[in-house]
Length: 245
Image 1 (cartoon, rainbow, N blue to C red):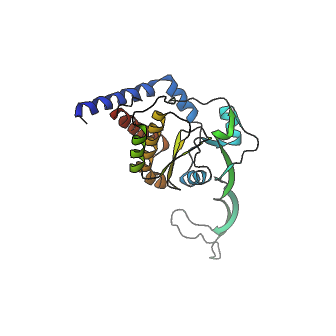
Image 2 (cartoon, rainbow, N blue to C red; image 1 turned 90 degrees about the vertical axis):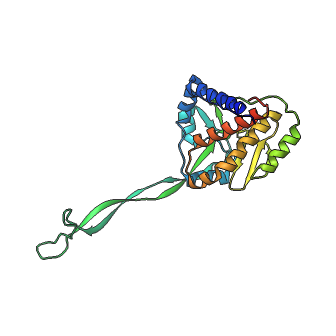
Image 3 (cartoon, helix red, strand yellow; image 1 turned 180 degrees about the horizontal axis):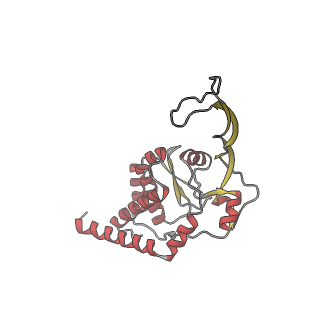
């Protein structure tokens, strides 16, 4: 690709990102997203194992309190682990804070005191994906693309060949356009979308598979960073092939 063409694409990407970040739409989006809990690696893995297409997850009461949505009747919760520390009283030798030696009584015996300590523990709780709820819509940054792609079948077959994971089409009830499942090593794209949206989604999820599987396993990058990287790569590749997104 000519260097000036790549520069034009990068400049358009940077301008588009800046406009999004400075918009009221993005500020509203961030306000809502900040209400979602940032789950630990262990719980993120538990969520993915039970519902790999999950996109936005919250507890039963949190959906109602923070988002004015309610969990649909009959929905099965996603089990995760929540901190449940408890207090216990234990006896221990009293230690001098300066010398770090046991404090002795008048008979030369160590003084024993009773103290209260907090012991870490966890309990199972249930959360629900947005696809399991109904109510007020959440703000969206992007809209679904419409349109066909010239030589679509050949283009998509090329993406399949370079993808680290097999690409499959399924009905994704969560509302996501696609997802990368590093646990089962596959990429899933929602059925019924346009050709250009299929292409963009495939590139987006291939980027996750290429760049973010390791960071998912060691929790080095947050979700927002991963999404910006994947969306930026999809934008650049699509524009390179004349698919303006």
